[in-house]
Length: 175
Image (tube, rainbow, N blue to C red; front, side):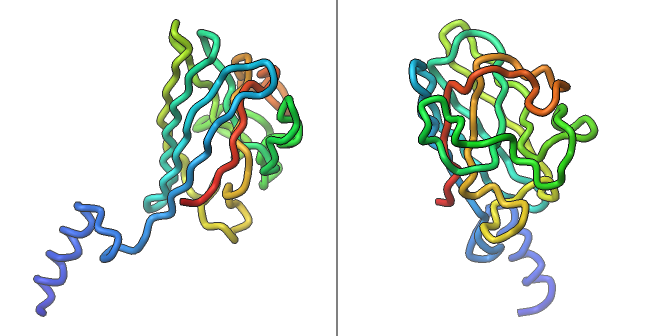
């Protein structure tokens, strides 16, 4: 094959998302389950593409309004209140804050807003220097917990954003 043909094949593979020609894209999912006394459930998917991880959140059973959402340091949702998930995932020791606006924990996702029926969706893109789906990397989120909180994250209170009790928890697992 000539260089033009190879370039055209590479362009088509990139546009089509053909994994066999561009390499596999890490994909992970967290199945969100309610903590004791709560009804929040959902699914969160993570797809690593290039220099970012695309996060797609779908939740139901929440109270209407904003809810803090964070990756936590431990992959353990076994406690009735999900306290077993530990604090926010923060491999760089940064202060808590708003994603995309200065210093913040790698696990800070800000807020997820539920409608009147308790459903919420959120799509965000996180740069891979912040975290990755590569399982053995020091900033990997694979095996960590994702937690949705009862209250909004105020995006400033240390160390957790004052976002209240944990209403749903799920472990991030590679697919």
